[in-house]
Image 1 (tube, rainbow, N blue to C red):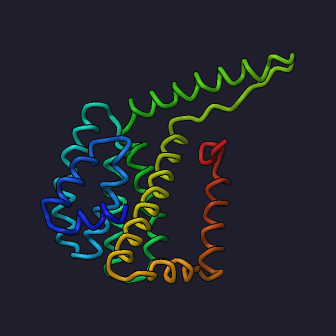
Image 2: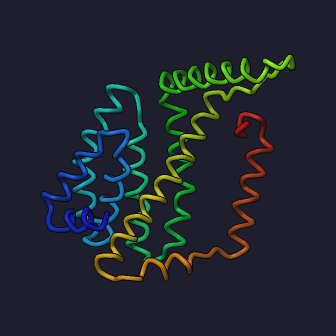
Length: 218
């Protein structure tokens, strides 16, 4: 992986080639997101934005053709976190920024991903129906709760937030491996949140869960 990061940092064309190649792929979009973050961290927000503008083309084409917003939201979410880290030089703050990224992503998918969400809900329903049949073979009827579209949108938003953090950490690791060996380990071990922030996040989760079953994952 370090060799890939070294190749990407040789020039604009190399970074563009790797980013665009993975941006339209469900399997490799995480590599494009990490490259975007690395370029943003090392060369600045302007260079990262230029690269993002090209990466949006294949990711947007995938969204248009199949309705899958995953690669596009991952690219955007990771870039946002990278910009926060670049401007603040504060890894805990950048990781914490995944919370609004996940919320905005979930709300966006809930608002505009109707048909796509319906397909996922159907797939979930078929899978759970199969699981029910297998679990009920002993004579006891088993009924598993089905997630609705709102819950699926929330799970997709949360997945984007977590994936964006992982891509950011990979980019930070690459940056340290190339330019500051050992620096990532020190920074990662120092990652810490005060009890007030942790308590605030926990209370927010409890408040959402208290709003009704549609705001919980079952």
